[in-house]
Image 1 (spheres, helix red, strand yellow):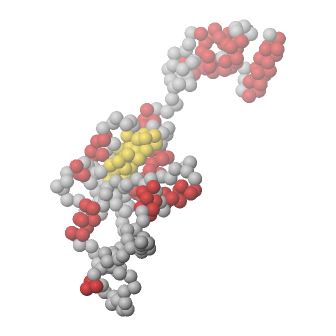
Image 2 (image 1 turned 135 degrees about the horizontal axis):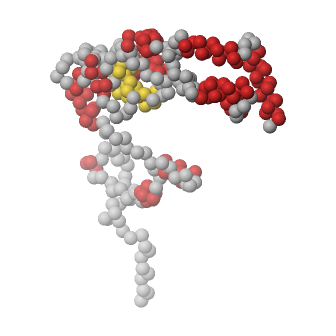
Length: 298
């Protein structure tokens, strides 16, 4: 307690030095004169203020009352704005040019890319802040090159698309002249109104394919690619080589079959002329090559 009292005395001495040497009685007298002349916004003085002032003069009261003083007796003094309503309105208009309802920082906005030529839109960011709008604008421009794009934002995912606000003009999507025009296929649109990237090449040789050939290619081309078989990771290299060379059991059987003996064609059907005598008789007229049986002796 003695140490707290010593600290309190040191704080009071420092406060008196910063106050310019004026006493508390002079301060109370000046405040009373201001209240009497209506120079304090006709504020009703607190009933506890004289008691607290007297306790501070006599060294009584608790420690908080002696340290805080009037700040504790007026808890709402810091919450009152120093500017009038008119000044606050002017400051708000300066911070929001053209009356635009600019979003606050914090990443609580959902941005959409809107194609101004037909009103088509698609999502870009689900949690964007004011500083992310420039980044989203560049992404929208790159998604649809050659077409005017604008970033619109909403405060929630479930909000109506008609209430989206443009980050450039500050107007809602419903006021866009081409709002929901993409839902009307019978309405004509500019040729450049789309998100297809422009071709940066030109065909300089060859004839263009005919319409019939193009349709045939489209019909014959399978829509789903056929999956390729993967090699067995546990197979040895020799087995993998056999599979790659299509050497299986059936191929081995076909190679092991002996060719059947060929029969000579008739002379009139032969393409090669036979020269010289026939060394061997025809199979039908051939005689047996066995030795003749011995004759019995009589």
